[in-house]
Image (tube, rainbow, N blue to C red; front, side, top):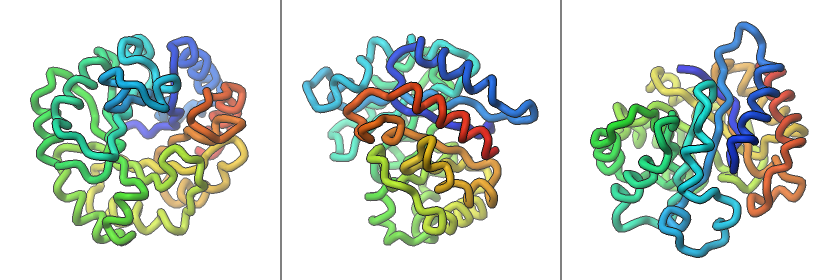
Length: 254
């Protein structure tokens, strides 16, 4: 399983090509890391319902074209925090729009029903990894207790391949390595087969936040979103100059 360095909120394949050039130029020769190409989708953008993210998430018709590179880790992030009456249908539809280049489906949601996720994965004709985001709400529901998180993840064993620990959830809130480390240790001990990713306020000026985790867990993956804009708001487009420097600084850590 390849660890990755992620950027979430790609809108075009040209942006992917631009960042891949930077990534490959600075990637250490011995590294097996990949560039995680994150594309966002929500129930509203899937169903073409007007909403605040309509202009900052790509239309579903464009997603497959963003996932054209076979040299990147192409991940469709499906965000659903308010519950859906038919999550299975929504995820099935979302996967269809990911196209043949989709490598992963990230579930940006709070402890979805494991049976629903399993039915979607088993019914799909595609091969892809499932990443479960354990975000702020999920951690709160688990009493911010690593053991409770591990116990809850048992329901997803055999369904998910990776876990993302992310209390920021796109808001640019800086991660706290001393808070996250016990969760990483507990997950690695109980589920050594899982890939583990962390996110939270990462950008070119904040890579020091994740350094303690990288030193203890050199195979950890990271993702960035909010801090790749001058404003810090995901309602604004990514500043690709900031994103480039983030990649350079991130790769220097590994």
